[in-house]
Amino acid sequence: MQKKGMELEGLVKSGDVVLAGVSGGADSVCLLLMLLEYRKHCDFLLEAVHVEHGIRGEASRRDAAFVKRLCEKRGVCCRIYPVDVPAYAKGHGLGVEEAARKLRYECFREAAEDYDGRPVKIALAHHADDNAETMLFRLIRGSGIHGLYGMRPARRLAEGVTVIRPLLGMERAEIEAYLKAQGQPYCRDATNEDTDYSRNRIRHKVMPELKAVNTGAVHHMMQSAQMLMELSDYLEEETRRATERVCRDTPDACVIDAVLFSEYPALLIREVLLVTLQKVAGSNRDIGSVHVEELCTLYTRQVGRVICLPYGVRAERVYEGIRLYREEPAVDMERESIEVTGEMLSRAEKEEVVLALPDGRLHLRIRDFSGNMQEIPKKTYTKWFDYGKIKSGLRLRRRESGDYLMIDAAGHTKKLKEYFVNEKIPAAKRDAIWLLATGSEILWVAGGRIGAGCKVGENTEKILEVRLSGGNDCEDQEN
Image: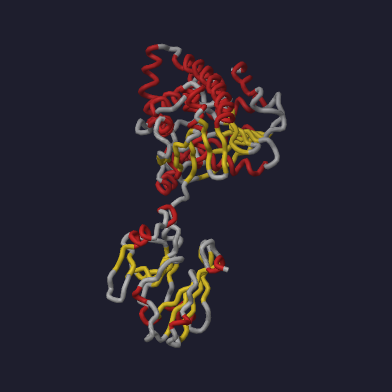
């Protein structure tokens, strides 16, 4: 055990704050004892963190009490965080395992915040068997080289905060043997036996079969994990160099030079495409080999071809190679919509009503009309309407399915989409245009025409003046 404990060297240094995740199970109890032993030779602050997941009811509370007693006996400060994993999982559309993991890390981050300015190490009790299970789990899910080695002994979580796994070189049987020799009891989590969980199914049904084939299965997998980690690091560095050479950033895109496809091996091509796509998308999640293959195929297509990728990313075949850019997200119809209420209109008869928009302001004013048609403003973003013809449900919003314009006094209509096409308004800009509407009838396309249904005429008594200001497309820009 002393030899195994030496793996703490390099992971924990004098002056560190070590927050040990202690569930009460064999692995975490062993970790706590190892850290206490190592503290005799290295001056660091040690605290225990226990997350009570709210999954097993009274059994969970008993585990928390066990950890508290253990820490009190050993003179270690213990933080207990009660959370509700089932509720969190349901509210965020996650599986229980993923929800528990997210909440655990939130608790660790919260604990680490108390030591801002000092190096914080979050010590977790993952061991060799855990890592073998992780390798298998990722393999069957289609992980690439960077995931096949499983877990690293140390990884950066945040500025000044590092996750460490001192037990990664030990197998489960060694941990249990050590605790038995020490006469140290520990808790047993019944959910670890539930094979409805994917990891438990691998642990109880797959791993025993592999060990039956070769008793050294876990040890050999850890040897492979080390080689895969070294290979991953080497590939990452080569990818960085290639990316610096073939990728060029512009203000609104990233261009991948065709030299990538002509001078580099297929493995490196895919890596460069993957990291570049993730960079443009701003996320690694849900981006994988299928999207990389689409980019490879795009390179063989004619110039001008465009494909759609996750997170609104578009890839265009250009003369230089491939251009990656993010298309502006579709407008949030609910957020960018303002109801013009009866109360607002009543106020508008006495004073100008000004309403804030995400990109400017909406001005409303009602007044008497003299009957002189020459007074009607010709400005693009100021329009008059016959207030007597205005129906209820007046809204300023973006376009919706079924929108139409009344094009003449006889009541003939035209679909809004047809109007956009006739006016040659680019499809990419249509969702950003403000519309004054009552139901599906469009009274005004901001910057364009007004409908015939509420036009001011010689018999109009009161007019509703509507003006847009403050945005890119508004009255302010006409001067």
